[in-house]
Amino acid sequence: MIPRAAGLLLAALLASACAPNAPEGVDKAVLDQTVGKAVGDPGTCVLIAQGGKTVYRFGSNVVCGRKLPACGGGLAQTPDDLLEAALASKTPTTASCPSNPEGSRLVAWASGPIEGHDMVYAAVMEGDNVPPGVVIADKLGAAFKAAGL
Image 1 (cartoon, rainbow, N blue to C red):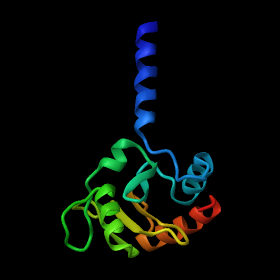
Image 2: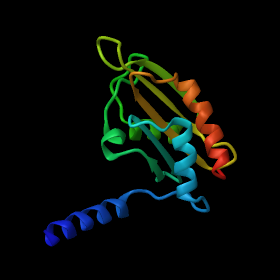
Image 3: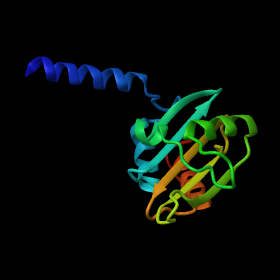
Image 4: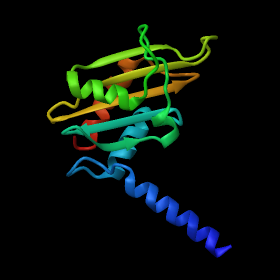
């Protein structure tokens, strides 16, 4: 029993060591809390990049790794794909559309620069009751400010 528990603990430590922490000078716990209050949901992923490197992630590996409809006729994308586009364009974007053929689930995307910083973010939310991407962008802007960004 102890070797199994030790193995699980080691796996958790290794996974957390690889995950981005938070932008320099920002308390990760505070950022997690403000993002969680703003758009926290099991189907949410928020990424922040600085200098081309991901420095923060809110959401599980599963949620942040999912390919979902890009909305607007493009191919499916991941939050990392949107983050790369945000790094290249530095232009705010939002989109929302059904995420399944029945239209019973929605996906919303938001990305762009973080005001007053050399960072960009990308966010996705998918589920039954998802606000539009423009609302997610607005809520995240307030959350980033509240966390000290």
